[in-house]
Length: 389
Image: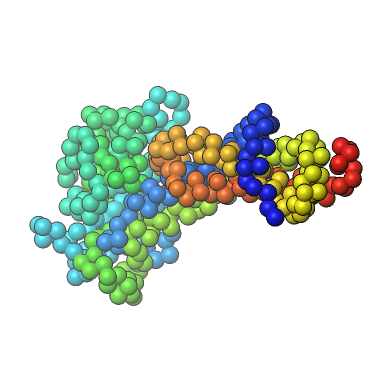
């Protein structure tokens, strides 16, 4: 026969100081754990949202990132003219050959500098990225020394305000607009006309990628086989969304691993705190435990009851930890994108999965912290317990 849950709730409430101290230790551990998951989820989300299922991206065969890729102008022209590329309202192919360069720029309002991605795009193919829209200023003009800046970095780096001038090599470019891209990684980049940025950055006639809207996305596999087998191109073709999702894997795994490692260390303290609380409860309730055994409750039921008490305390801490983690949702931070070695700004994302994982972590700490005290409660000698010793 199991003890009623009301019995556990009453005992937890009778030890408010010990319960609160233990729950607080669990809550801090859970909050840090959720924070690490939110960081990884935010980074992954910003890269996954960068791609579109309707778009394909061509890179040099063997390249694992944009900056390690290189395509000739001849290859670019062949890809643009392919019948599998969709056309825009003006009849031109919805395709852009991108020049991708990493440059170092000073931060605004603080010492130091960081790498930024500069992307040269085809002005006629900007519509390939449907999520891109201006939030201030105007679009750069084709053939002009003008750039637009992603709004996530506009306030973080010097000379990125509208009307400011950014120098690339020995050439100045005027910032004429700020843009957003639905939370995508493009919001951490500087864009301009590839035909102008190429000579300024010593990248004539070489492009990193070609991104195009597919006429029929359902035929991607056939299109992939056709283009990858063309000896003139020497390219690999990927769905744009899949490509950017792959770029997030290394950092996401690193942050998640570090988060689990740090919280695992912290959880040791939380587990010992729960164990101490429950050992103290067992010591203070020896006669009560003996009485329960005399009344017919089996040792297993007593043991389960103490484990449940420990889990209840830990779950209370888990709920508090979730509440502590919620305010970081949406806070913008930045880190180095290992695939481009440039700064990438993104927002923490406290997802339902992260909250569930946090509660699961709290449950595990409560289970581990309560197991041995509960085992001691179930095994104590009945005669000695009835005498109070």
